[in-house]
Structure formats: C-alpha cells, structure tokens
Amino acid sequence: MGGFAGTAQAASVPALTAFPVVGNVSYIDDFGAPRPQGRHEGNDIMAIRHQPAVAFERGRVEKHVGSSMGTCMLYLHGVSGMTYVYIHLNNDLTMKNDNRGGCRNGVSWAPGLRNGQTVRRGQLVGFVGDSGDADGIQPHLHFEVRTPSGRAINPFTYLNRAKRLLYPRPAAADPIRLLLSRARLVSVGAGTVTVQTRRIRVSSQSAAYARRRQVVLTLPLEAIVERITSTGRVAANLAGVSPGTVVRVSTSSFAPSWATQRAAAAVLSVGYVTIY
Image (cartoon, rainbow, N blue to C red; front, side, top):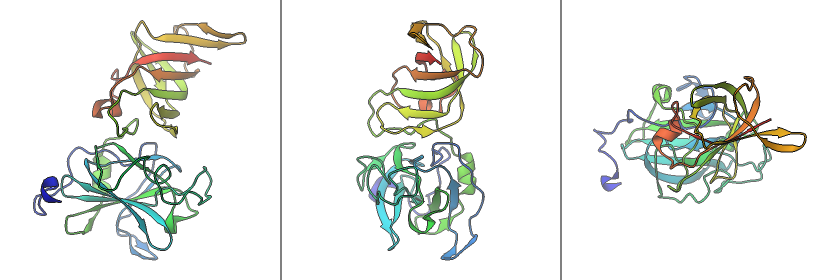
C-alpha cells in the first residue's frame, strides 16, 4: 500500500464517511450473530435489488469472486488504512432472482470499474444483490470493516454516523443532472420547491433507483414548468398546485460533489418540472 494508507497503529475509520448503500434501507447490529458458516463478521444492510453501493471512504478497489458459490464481492482499501468488504453484490439481469448476470461490471460492479482503481468517497462501486449463499433471500449488502491486520470490527456505530446520500457519484467529474421521476409535490416556497422523491436517475448513468426522501430545490425564474394536458404540454407554474401532485423534476446541470450528494436545502436547483 506504501503511502496510500496509514500505519496499523494510526489507522481508524474516518469521521466523515458515506453510507455504503444509496436508498432506503434497514439494518440492525447483527455483528457476531451465529451463522451456518460461523460468526457473522459484518452488518447486513437490507435493500432492494440493484440499489447503488458506494465507496465508504476514498480508497483503492479490488474486485473479487468468493467461493464456488459465485459470491460477487468488492474490497475497498481506504486511505485511512481500514478495509471495507462488500459481499452479495448483484448477479441478476432483471428485478427477479434470475442468476443470469454473473459477477461483472455493470451487473455486480460499477460500469468500467478496474481493479486497483482509486475511487472517491460516495462514488458508485457496485449494486446490491443476493449472490453466493444469500441466493434467494432478500437482497442485501453484507458490509464489513477490517483493521490493517485483517480483524473484523463491528460496523454498526460507523454506519449510524455515515452520511446518507441522494445519489451515487459517477467516476467522471463531468456535470450531471438528476432526474426525479414520479416525485410528489410537498410545498412551494419563496424561490424554492420541496418534493418527495420516489425514483432517481443520474443523467450519466443508465439505471434509475428507488429513493424516498424530501428534497428542497431552488426554483429559479428561468426554470421551465409544464403541465401535461389532454392536448399535450402547456406552459404552467407551480402556484396553486396541490400537495401530493405527481411531478417529474430535472435539476439544473451541476458538478458532482460531496455537498450535492448530501443535498441540503437549496443546494440543488430546478431545471424543469412536468406536472401530471
């Protein structure tokens, strides 16, 4: 690792990390629980098949296929000196448990991801699934935290303090837009609009993912607002639109960053809105 990571004595989980799954998930402190193969050495993050998995911290990735059962895995060797293990990544081509995808880029791991590649905190590294001995049960990410000596430690506290992200960061630094489909209008304020998201797609990525969260966006004067009518699209405005109305929102183009991934109020801006 050379100078890439700290020494074994200095290594520790950073204070600022990205929660390893983007989306609405559940997990408990199941570290140490008995399993058929031995003591559970991580926490299981229950999610939806194909949900994005992202880098917990900045580091170097190592793709791996574990055991004869074809467990799709990834090791993230963090700059801190800690290693994070992502197990049961996706091997399905559809939303069903078809087992037809194998362990490969675009199915298990992010498109174009290379062994030894350095990734940013919050960058897309893979997709949640049920590969290996999790086949046929609820898709989840088995997430481990390991010290430089290889000892597994309980991830629970670190998961609790990790930051939940609105979207997975692409590998490239090119400007992107977020497409919020089937969102619902919550409120319209002075120069802002609040929506409840349902599905999100990053413009540079092919697949949308489920994400339910309220987001407050700025509403600039130049934003385009249209309404779908029986005769087609017509210009409209959001004044008087009832809360709960279904809308499709595209953000303005922006450079991906830690701040935009966390998406605090008024960090992102509306490009256009379609009212249904």
